[in-house]
Length: 278
Image (cartoon, rainbow, N blue to C red):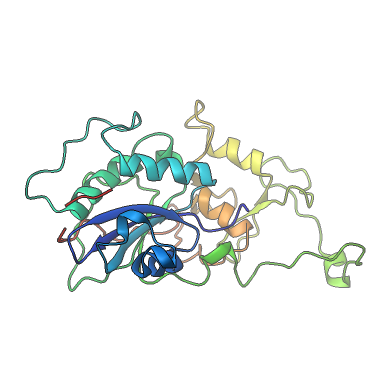
């Protein structure tokens, strides 16, 4: 399912351990970890709880991409995608080591071009120190509990599929076919056009046309990171356009012309308490 949540998360234990895993339902997975093996928890988390979820990374296009990210985060010294990683220092807490590896992963190919997001879950009394090195500029950092809009990729503006054989409503029949803002040809229903998430911008474009336009400064790349809207000239992230086309309506917050579609919030490694036990 293209729009579902794929999260690679990091846990910290009050007993002094850290754990990285993958889930499509992070809140439920955390309950399983704290419930032990009988509740579906992992073997490595059964005796070190209770656990708290520090953060999760999401926005992966497939389960395979997320699972490869998870494996590299669990085995940074074995991953061929990462530069040499300094082993955990004698007094370095395990969650601090995990957060030291995370930005290296986000800057390594192929993940450096994916529309990934970080959601920090554990509240801190003060400002969160930034990750070092800084993640790519298009990686959005968020804080707070998992919003309902992210679960399963569903949104309030998503249209339900019409049952087979059902006729279109007069409103749907009267809706004109938009013209692609890049090539000028009409946009058909399949594949659906990508639209600018900034109201009232009317931009609609064929996905291949808009991708080629965004990739003009990077002709050797296959996946665009973002670019300027052909109509309102706001800087749009490719991942936000895809999420918006799947029905997520939260991608327009903070969008500004000629600026980031979503301003990253400062985030980074808090002082934890835990040996690294991936």
